[in-house]
Length: 204
Length: 129
Image (cartoon, rainbow over the protein chains, first blue to last red):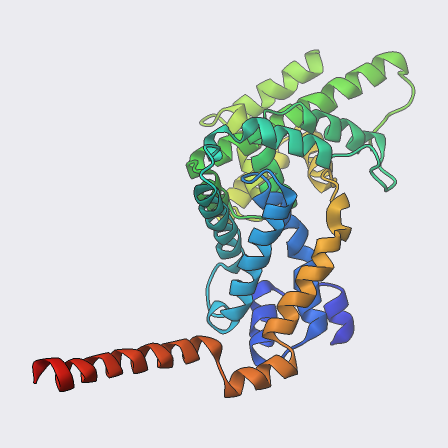
């Protein structure tokens, strides 16, 4: 059992079911360490300061865990958590009487996204993936955000639509156009490589 | 250039109803594991339709499999603090026992209803009379 836990084999539903029955720190940590950074990142799309994001995420997680028995039976735990963070963030902004609401988050999101793709990326990344990562940076901010939420964070199209106030169709279009751009970059890269050194095939 | 042209032509022919953009949307939907069985089947059909489409499918798979967003902030100091705080408040044995005897939120409710009861009693005893 312990080994399975370490390998992240639990679904959210199972984690909440188990935590509702008994306090299991290992399982709790598994959830916490996976979601805390994601949720901080997400809250930062709304609120600018890190301290505010931390406060919001801690509050949300506290409430989520308090309701763990009820939540264990719900269909879409992940969507619920992200939407809670969004609502809590908007509540925070309203409280602080800030004018910055989601619609003009784009420039900040852009800033945030570029810093999160950092040069100190630490794993043997091949050239193919480096090209893709660089072309992700050229995507329009909202498209990049949608792409990250679905591909990297594994969120549902429906949830992303709700979270970003878009239609599901628009989310689909963003995903399609993002992939198209990335594919074009790879095509161009291959073509360049081929012209420069016709002997070696690059990607097999 | 001509190879790419051929590729695009190939897609247009194979997916007569949908545009190229729809193909990419379909790929994203399938790769993210959120496509219907029908959609999965239609992507497979397209993939197997020609060597070019298969090569393109492989490129798209490679694109999808990369990890591009660095979560360098994983080791935030605040993370451990928040982790401990929530765990202590909600799960630890000490607080659970404490909560069993005196639940603060319930205490407030009891206090509030007591005050209301006393107020009503006061009104009845001294004012109404």
